[in-house]
Length: 401
Image (cartoon, rainbow, N blue to C red):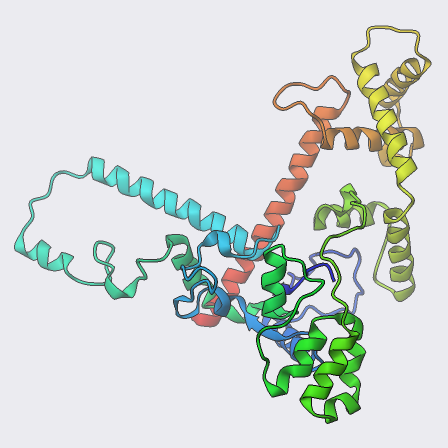
C-alpha cells in the first residue's frame, strides 16, 4: 500500500454520444440513467464492504455537511480547503462558481449602497428588519458561523447526496498515521473494533490478503483467533513511492488521452480492439525511458541553440536548422503522416510544456502556437467539466421539483 486510504466517487452518467475516456464505444452499449448508475455503484460498494475490501461507505455530504459536522481533529467547522480536491471534479468547479456568484453579489450590493438615496428609518422598517430569515437578519435559518461558500455548497449537495460516495479503505488509526507522516511499519491499532467488523477492518487494511475474507475457518473461529491469524499475515509497507515518476502529455487529462486514442485509432468497441489498444497504450507508457529521456534532453538543447544561433560550424546546429525549414515547407506535415515533422513536433511539444519564457516571445519555432493549442485544450477540458457539472445540477433540480 502507498497510503491510499479513501476513495471518492462521483456518479455522473455521460451525455448520450459523449466520449468520456475511451474512444469508440460499442454500438449496443447503453447509457444508464442517473438513478441506475447510483444504484449500481451502491450495490458494488456494499459488496466490497461485505467482502472486507472497504471498511465503510458514506456520502460526501454526510462527511462534511450533515448536521453542521466539524473536523474531528480540530473541532472546527469544515471550510472549502478541507474538501477533497480532484482536477475536473464537481466540487472544485462548483466552488469556483459559488465564489464568483458571491463576488458579483457583493459588487452589486456595493453599487446599490452608492446609488440608493438615504432612507429615513421608520417604525415599520424597524419591524421589518426584525424578521428572521432575511438577508439583514438571517436568524436561525442560516448557519452564520460557517463559511458562506460551505453554506451554499451544503444547499446544493443536499439535493444530490446519493451521487457522491466516500469509501474508507483503511482504519482511522492508519489514516491519522499516514496524514501525520508517521512511520506505519510498526503501526498498532488502538481503537477496538466491533465483534462483527474485526475481520473486515483488518482485511481492509491490506489488500494483499483479501482472499482471507473467504476463509471460512477464520470466520467461524472466535474473534481473537481470527484477529491474531490475520495480523500475522499483515506487513504494512512504506507509504513512500519508490517508483520513478513517468510524465506523458497524453495522460495529463481525459481529453488528451481521448485525442491520443483517436489519432492512433485505438478503439474499444470490440474485445479484440480493446485488448490491442490497451497493449499499445501500456507499451507506450512503459517503454524504457532512461536513455530516451537523455536523448530528448540533448535534442532540446540543440533546438534551443539552433533557434537563436546566427551561424556556427556545428553539424547538429545546421541539421536542426534544416529540420526547421522542412517543417515550414512540408506539404504533408505531421497531420498527414510525415515522420520527420512528427518527430520534431514531439520535441517542440515537450519544450512548449516546460518553456521558461513567461509573457515574452520564445525564439523556438512554433512554441507560441503550441502554447496556444495547449491553452485551447485546457479550455476545452474546462468546458467539458462545466457541461457535466451543469447536467448534474439540472438533474438534481428536476428530481427535487
